[in-house]
Length: 117
Image (cartoon, rainbow, N blue to C red; front, side, top):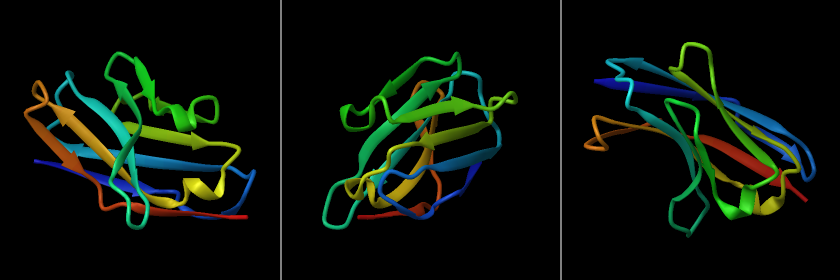
Protein backbone atom coordinates (compact mmCIF):
# COMPACT_ATOMS: atom_id res chain seq x y z
CA UNK A 1 0.00 0.00 0.00
CA UNK A 2 1.11 3.56 -0.72
CA UNK A 3 0.18 6.74 1.11
CA UNK A 4 0.60 10.24 -0.29
CA UNK A 5 0.75 13.31 1.91
CA UNK A 6 0.42 16.77 0.35
CA UNK A 7 1.17 20.21 1.73
CA UNK A 8 1.74 23.76 0.57
CA UNK A 9 -1.62 24.97 -0.68
CA UNK A 10 -3.13 28.28 0.33
CA UNK A 11 -4.38 31.67 -0.75
CA UNK A 12 -2.22 33.88 -2.92
CA UNK A 13 -2.73 36.96 -5.07
CA UNK A 14 -2.51 36.78 -8.85
CA UNK A 15 1.12 36.88 -9.95
CA UNK A 16 2.29 35.21 -6.76
CA UNK A 17 3.93 31.85 -6.14
CA UNK A 18 3.27 28.70 -4.17
CA UNK A 19 5.16 25.44 -3.76
CA UNK A 20 3.32 22.18 -3.27
CA UNK A 21 4.97 19.10 -1.77
CA UNK A 22 3.92 15.47 -1.83
CA UNK A 23 5.64 12.71 0.13
CA UNK A 24 5.04 9.08 -0.74
CA UNK A 25 5.40 6.29 1.80
CA UNK A 26 4.92 2.55 1.66
CA UNK A 27 6.07 0.15 -1.04
CA UNK A 28 7.46 2.29 -3.84
CA UNK A 29 8.79 0.74 -7.04
CA UNK A 30 11.35 2.39 -9.27
CA UNK A 31 9.05 2.38 -12.32
CA UNK A 32 6.78 4.96 -10.74
CA UNK A 33 5.48 8.15 -12.24
CA UNK A 34 4.39 10.92 -9.90
CA UNK A 35 2.33 13.91 -10.81
CA UNK A 36 -0.02 16.71 -9.91
CA UNK A 37 -3.62 16.96 -11.04
CA UNK A 38 -6.21 19.60 -10.24
CA UNK A 39 -9.95 19.92 -10.11
CA UNK A 40 -11.75 23.23 -10.17
CA UNK A 41 -15.41 23.54 -9.17
CA UNK A 42 -17.77 22.07 -11.77
CA UNK A 43 -14.84 20.91 -13.90
CA UNK A 44 -13.20 17.55 -14.52
CA UNK A 45 -9.94 16.66 -12.90
CA UNK A 46 -7.03 17.42 -15.23
CA UNK A 47 -3.33 16.66 -15.39
CA UNK A 48 -1.08 19.55 -14.46
CA UNK A 49 2.39 18.00 -14.55
CA UNK A 50 3.98 14.56 -14.28
CA UNK A 51 7.53 13.32 -13.75
CA UNK A 52 9.00 9.88 -14.26
CA UNK A 53 11.42 8.20 -11.89
CA UNK A 54 14.19 9.14 -14.32
CA UNK A 55 13.17 12.79 -14.34
CA UNK A 56 11.31 13.18 -17.63
CA UNK A 57 8.50 15.70 -17.35
CA UNK A 58 5.28 16.61 -19.09
CA UNK A 59 3.09 19.67 -18.51
CA UNK A 60 -0.37 20.83 -19.40
CA UNK A 61 -0.19 23.63 -21.98
CA UNK A 62 -1.92 26.00 -19.56
CA UNK A 63 0.96 25.85 -17.06
CA UNK A 64 4.03 25.53 -19.30
CA UNK A 65 6.62 28.16 -18.46
CA UNK A 66 4.98 28.93 -15.10
CA UNK A 67 5.00 25.64 -13.17
CA UNK A 68 7.93 23.32 -12.53
CA UNK A 69 7.68 19.75 -11.25
CA UNK A 70 10.66 18.11 -9.58
CA UNK A 71 11.60 15.21 -7.33
CA UNK A 72 13.53 15.19 -4.11
CA UNK A 73 16.82 13.36 -3.77
CA UNK A 74 15.06 10.35 -2.25
CA UNK A 75 12.77 10.17 -5.29
CA UNK A 76 9.75 9.60 -3.05
CA UNK A 77 8.89 13.28 -2.81
CA UNK A 78 7.58 15.43 -5.62
CA UNK A 79 7.26 19.21 -5.70
CA UNK A 80 5.30 21.63 -7.82
CA UNK A 81 6.67 25.15 -7.97
CA UNK A 82 3.92 27.42 -9.21
CA UNK A 83 4.86 30.93 -10.36
CA UNK A 84 2.87 33.72 -12.01
CA UNK A 85 -0.32 32.25 -10.62
CA UNK A 86 -3.62 33.21 -12.22
CA UNK A 87 -7.17 33.09 -10.84
CA UNK A 88 -7.90 30.24 -13.26
CA UNK A 89 -5.31 28.15 -11.41
CA UNK A 90 -7.69 28.02 -8.46
CA UNK A 91 -8.48 24.36 -7.75
CA UNK A 92 -7.91 21.46 -5.43
CA UNK A 93 -4.52 20.00 -6.35
CA UNK A 94 -4.00 16.26 -6.00
CA UNK A 95 -0.81 14.27 -5.96
CA UNK A 96 -0.85 10.97 -7.80
CA UNK A 97 1.55 8.03 -8.02
CA UNK A 98 1.39 5.35 -10.71
CA UNK A 99 3.54 2.23 -10.61
CA UNK A 100 3.77 -1.39 -11.66
CA UNK A 101 3.27 -0.49 -15.28
CA UNK A 102 0.38 1.79 -14.48
CA UNK A 103 -1.69 -0.99 -12.95
CA UNK A 104 -1.55 0.63 -9.52
CA UNK A 105 -2.36 4.28 -8.90
CA UNK A 106 -2.73 6.20 -5.68
CA UNK A 107 -4.09 9.66 -4.85
CA UNK A 108 -3.40 12.13 -2.11
CA UNK A 109 -6.17 13.84 -0.18
CA UNK A 110 -5.81 17.11 -2.10
CA UNK A 111 -4.74 20.61 -1.14
CA UNK A 112 -6.65 23.80 -1.96
CA UNK A 113 -4.98 26.51 -4.02
CA UNK A 114 -6.87 29.77 -4.32
CA UNK A 115 -5.61 32.65 -6.45
CA UNK A 116 -7.32 35.99 -5.94
CA UNK A 117 -7.49 38.65 -8.65
